[in-house]
Length: 449
Ligand SMILES: *[C@@H]1O[C@H](CO)[C@@H](O)[C@H](O)[C@H]1NC(C)=O
Ligand SMILES: *[C@@H]1O[C@H](CO)[C@@H](O)[C@H](O)[C@H]1NC(C)=O
Ligand SMILES: *[C@@H]1O[C@H](CO)[C@@H](O)[C@H](O)[C@H]1NC(C)=O
Ligand SMILES: *[C@@H]1O[C@H](CO)[C@@H](O)[C@H](O)[C@H]1NC(C)=O
Image (cartoon, rainbow, N blue to C red):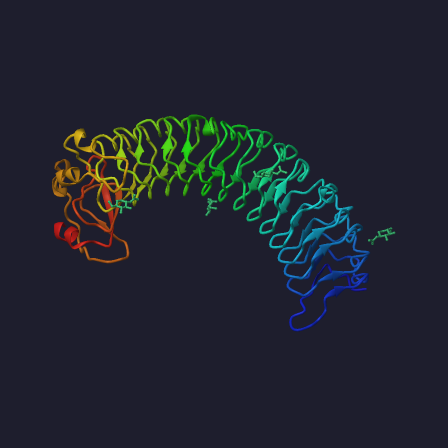
């Protein structure tokens, strides 16, 4: 007898082979892998995988299955991976996974599941990864995922609206939880209580608007948190609390207009904050205070008109600050001091002024981005004289739509990207400037250099 270890079946064109008959593989008892990807299978007869006690993987990706029937795999107790991605599955029977005590990966992405019976998952005591992306699941109940060894749960793009308070109480080993693109409107304060091993949480693209105080605090190991597109309107001191291991915080494309002082200060490992695409009008002095580990800060695409004095003070490790498409035309005199490691500052339209004559001239702003204080703008010093350090010797400046990089002859370290340049501009002469990336240069700017 030929002892195949793996079998790949792909019925390529216009066949109507849609059924896997009973005992199909009975002559290959040593099979450990069956790949049936991209066929037209819509029916699996009882006993189809009979006699395959060494089987570890079956891949049904891209077929026409609609139902996962009971007991089909019951005697293949060594199965580790079962993949049903890209079928038309609408239901899973209660005893579908009986006997699969060693299964570690079960994948159902791109199907039409509205629910999975809780009882169907119960035999899967070793399940490590469950992938349910792109289905129509609408709720997560207390026992939906009673899977103590689960480490990765993916529910991207479903219709989840209701999540029980104790939905994840079984999942203390979970490391990755993806709930992006659902219909979640609120998160209960207890929801994440048991997830103390979670490393990454993505709840972006939902309708949350408000986060309960310290809701994320139990996840003491969390490294990455994505709250992009969740309709958040403000960040308070207690929104995050202490998240000692958080490295990356993504708050982009919300409606955040207010961040309380010290909102981030207990996060002792934070290296990246993304706040682009919000409604911030000002950056207060104490918002980013004590974030000595922060390396990357993006506040681009906000309605910013005011950066308070010392707003970025003591950001000793900040490498990169993005202020593109903000309407900042004035910056308080000391806003950028004490940033010894700043390498990249990105600003739009050369509007950021390094040398405000007096703080007073920034006061006249109203909350609206439209009312940019022209007086301040006009008062900006001529660039070449900014802090008395002439910025000269840009060679070969040409107008171009693609960013270009120029090196100055000064011994400078900062990169400044100035896009759509027009009007007066200036450079942070106190921090030292090394590279300037210019794109879409106006004739005005060209003229000056
Ligand atoms: C599993 O094995 C038992 C005992 O060998 C047998 O009675 C049963 O029919 C098998 N079930 C399937 C689904 O192959
Ligand atoms: C699910 O959530 C919706 C909207 O928040 C709510 O109206 C509904 O009562 C909830 N259903 C259940 C069963 O909790
Ligand atoms: C965060 O979520 C947004 C929106 O769903 C997504 O586009 C982005 O790729 C996510 N970022 C990361 C780092 O996962
Ligand atoms: C900046 O101001 C201009 C006009 O003053 C306005 O058209 C634009 O939308 C503003 N941009 C932002 C990001 O608020």
